[in-house]
Length: 242
Image 1 (cartoon, one colour):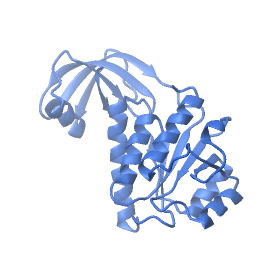
Image 2 (cartoon, helix red, strand yellow):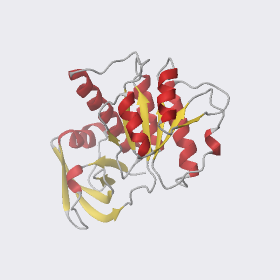
Image 3 (tube, helix red, strand yellow):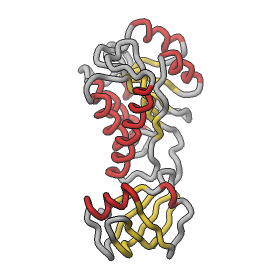
Image 4 (tube, one colour):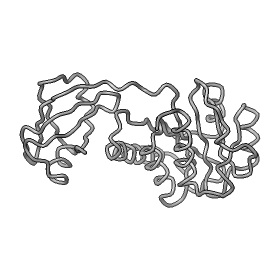
């Protein structure tokens, strides 16, 4: 499969035109991936534009390519949103990477009551930027036409407010209803995944009062790094994405 690159400024490019990769993408193409003149690649703007191209010229500072074909990919009808609780170590980052590869459409960092990691002040902006970088690289790896957005970190109260706009499914290993029994409707689906210590009883009550549904994944207890991606895989099948 051809190498894929993300160039936000390529939105208006059409067949026959030349596009120049610069900065980090040029370095990744020329130094890391060692593309060669005549090699076929694909380029996307992260918002549905998909270009098939061929490398025209390569240097250390830039890579020039010629567009062969332009395709516009439709956005998903029902979006999958992952509200991922902040977790210690790199477990939340592992969840974000896998979720992007598996098809999530938006990621919301959640400041859960039991989150060991805390995003406050400058750390919040730095953390969001880190997650956005992970998402971008995962989207390139997965050859995604749409790159998921990473929202600002939200509190439980802010998540609860979104329950009126989206169908909220709270992953809880003690829930009676299996995720596989859910039947998607036209609403976006938000998956809520707790931290290592789980979602607190008070938070579960607030979600339930807002109309959220508690669902479980099988009979085992998954880590915070695997629960979201596993649920996204199930929903992708239900939504006929796979």
